[in-house]
Amino acid sequence: MLSRERVCNALNHREPDKIPVELNGTANSSLTGEAYKNLRKYLGMQEDKDTKISWITMGTVRAAEDLLKKYEVDTRSVYFRPSKKNELKFLNDGSFYDEFGARWKPASYYYDVVERPMSNISEKEEIKSFKWPNPYDDTMIEGLMQDTRKLYEKTNYCLVADFHTLGPFEGGCYLRGFENFLMDLYSNWSFAEPILDRLTDYCIARWEALLNEVGDYVQVVCQGDDLGTQKMPYISPEIYRKFINPGIRKYMIQYG
Image (cartoon, rainbow, N blue to C red; front, side, top):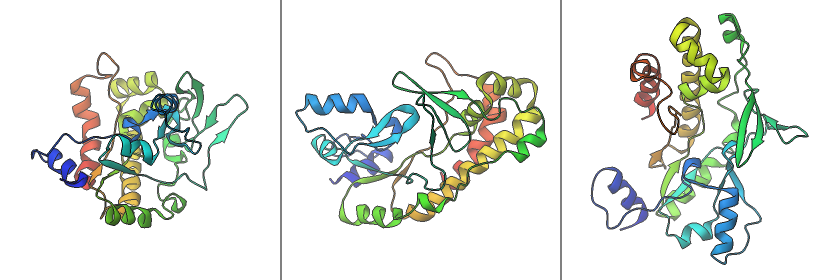
C-alpha cells in the first residue's frame, strides 16, 4: 500500500497495511530547531545547513528529505511562502514585529508576545479601523501550485496543507491579550463579537487563497485553535458553544 492510500485509509477508518508515519506535515508535528539538530547528530547524519523554519514563534523547522525518508514518513507538507511584501521586522534585542503588529521576543525555545496590537483598544470603531494583513498576498503563492502538482504527480505521499492562520479564539487572545479578551467574552460581548467575526473572515480568506492554488492536490488540511492550558480549558464549554463554535463551524462548513 502506498503512502497516500495508507493515510487516507486510516483517516477514513479503513484498516491500512500499517500505521502511517507523520512528521513535518504541520508545524505542530515538526521538530524544534535544537531537537532537529541533535537528532541528526545522534543518527550520524550531516548537519542540515539549509534548515527551513516552519513556525518561527514556536521554534519549529522543516526536516530535510533525507530524514523523512529514513523514518519512512508518509506525508509531505504544503504551505505558504514567506511574504515578500510584509516581511518580519527584527529589532536589536532579537524580537520582531509580525504582520499584525504584535511584537514577539525570544523566550527559551520559542517566542512570547510582549506587545499586543489591540490591547489598548477601547472603542468598537477602533476595531473597524484596525489594519489587517492581506490574506491574498500573491507573493505567498508564487510557484506553489506547480510545486504541489509535482509532488502529487511524481510521488505517492499524502499531501498536507499546513495550518497558516490563527483560530478565532486564539487570535482574540493574541491580539487583545488573554486577560482582556477573556473578560470581553464574559462581560463585553459586543466588543468581542466583531473581533471574532473579523478573525473568522480572515481565516476563511486565507484558506481560500491557499486552496484555490492547491486544493486539487492535497488530501489533508490542518487548522488549529488553542483552547486550553496543559491542565484545563481556558473557557467553559458553555462559553465555547455560545461564542466560539459558530465561527469555527462557519469556516469548517465552507472548507472542512
